[in-house]
Structures are given as C-alpha cells and as structure tokens.
Image 1 (tube, rainbow, N blue to C red):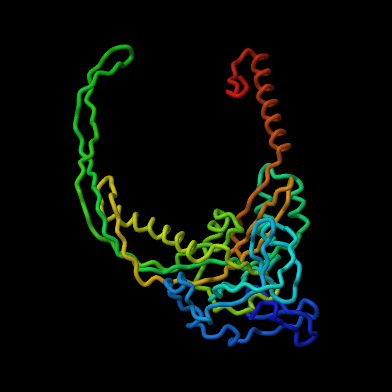
Image 2 (cartoon, rainbow, N blue to C red):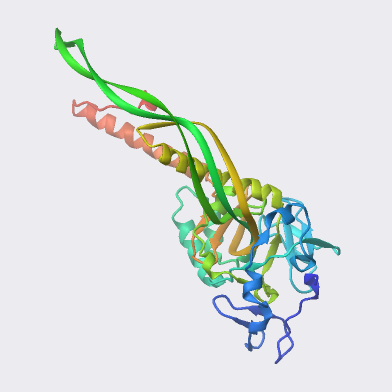
Length: 378
C-alpha cells in the first residue's frame, strides 16, 4: 500500500495520531487520547524477521510480499529519498533542511522487514544534542543560540541492510619468526670510542597454508547516501535484538528515508567488512611474530539479508551557506555531528595566545631572565 494511504485517526477527536517513543501506543497531540498498537499490526514476527535469500534479491526476483510501493521525493540538494506518512505534500528535508515537495508517483522497492522503534523522545534527544553542542570549542555563537532556542528535531527512520553468510577460506602465506644475533660495534661516548655488543633482530620466513571458517550474522551497512558514512557508522552500537516486525504504525508522525544504496552496492560493502575479519582470522591462524598473506580463496554459502529501519533524531543547521547535520541515536542517545568553526573565535584565541607569549617575554627581559618563544613567533 502506498504510504499516502495510511491514516491513524484519533478515535476520540479524529486528529492524526503519532507513535509514542518507548511505548507501543499512538497518542493524539490534540486531545491527549491514547490508542494501543494492536499486536496483529506487525503480523507474524517469525516471518517478518526471517532472512531473505541474497541471490534472489540481487536478481530482483523476490516475492511480491517482500516488495512495497511508497510515495517519495528526491531532495534537490542532498539527493535523499524522503518518504512521508499521511497526506503531507510538502516538508523540509531532514538531512539538509532544504524545502521539498513530495512527488505524486510511487516507487517500488524492497520492503523493510523490521525496525527498531524510537526509544528516546524528541525532548530527550534534543537534550543530548544540546549537551554535545555545548562542549564544542570555537563553535559560532549562532550555533549555540540555535541549540538554546530548542528547535524541534526530526525523527527519521534511516535504512540499513544486514547480511548473513557462512565462509570457508583457504589461504597461503608465510609465517615470520624472530631470531637474534650479536654483533660488535664501535660507538663514541663522551668523545671516546668504545666497543659494545648489540643484539640484532632477524626474521626467518616459513611457507604456510591453511583453512579458516567463520559465520557472519547481521553485518550492518547503512543504505543511505544522504548521511556521511562516518556519522552513520559512528552512531553505534545498535541493539539489533530490539528489532520488531515492520508495521506502519511505528512510522506515524515520523519520516522515513528510502534506501539510496541498492542491495548490490550494500552487499559489496558488507562483503568487504567480512573479508577484513577473515584476514584477521588468517593472520591469527598463521601465527608467528609476523605474517605475510599471499592469497585467500573464500567460498561463501547461506548468504541472506534483511532491509531494516533504525531510528535517528536529526537536526540540520545552516552556517555561511553550508548545511551541518547533527544526529542522535534514537535507541541509545549516542550523538554524532558535523561542526562549523568560528574563524573569529579562532583568530581571537591565536591573538590572545600571542599577547600572552609576548607579555611573558617582556617580563622576562625586564627581570633579566630567559624565555623561549614558540617556533611560529620566531
């Protein structure tokens, strides 16, 4: 069902309900009425959290029940695929604060199988963000004013892929083992030459080969180009044990982004993360003091994936024509963000430091002492 067909009218006054973070209820901001989300809304939990076959997903051959059509629009500034529940036709991009108008068409894509509902309220997230912003040195005063004004944050469900796989890897390489020899050297000590014994380290290399196996579960890959990879990856940790079957009721009053990193691209990134772990396994298996890896041949099996949504409170701030994003993990309260720098504050700090150094130099000269100036003042 396209998202614009979803409605959550209040049973008491008819106004639209929103999901209450940390609960399993919908609340009405107009009259305060509360309605429970029925347990049947999310459907069968075992079916919803079941992994999908990766090969079928890459062939675009998934069952119709695993696909969905949503009403989306592309942000003209950052390219985010913004999805809105309800009858909204215009909004502000939560990723860069650019005004956007929703398209009238729909997009067919892989349906989210599960999500982690928001656990933090907007007030709790704003408090965490304000505390983080207040700790920034050399931030513009306008940023601090922005934090104090308490502008509402956007609650956005950000798309992620998770990947499972079994791996069986055969490798070849070399194990390096240290051994030491003693040599006689001549060194100058206090202007005189002396003879000393020194130990010299060498490495003896042995050809090795072997096999390692590992199973991977829920390797997480952000499925959005709208957020810097660093920010998205550093919002960890996520407790994926809190995943619940996808139900549109959890999106009531929130926004969701459609994935902009397709399954194949996400899988390539996930495979790269797995291969890094396998290389560590191979080095550990080779042993010795040093390792050289000549080749790893991995056989992959039981490859599956899920499309999930994770909760992020988000604020976008514009300074000197550039957008800066601040993110709060909607489950744990972890804060990450981009920060602008105030050139005037930095220049003032440098000036103060220079004046203090010159003052110290002047006092030392007056007292006949010595003072060493920083290199940049020589």
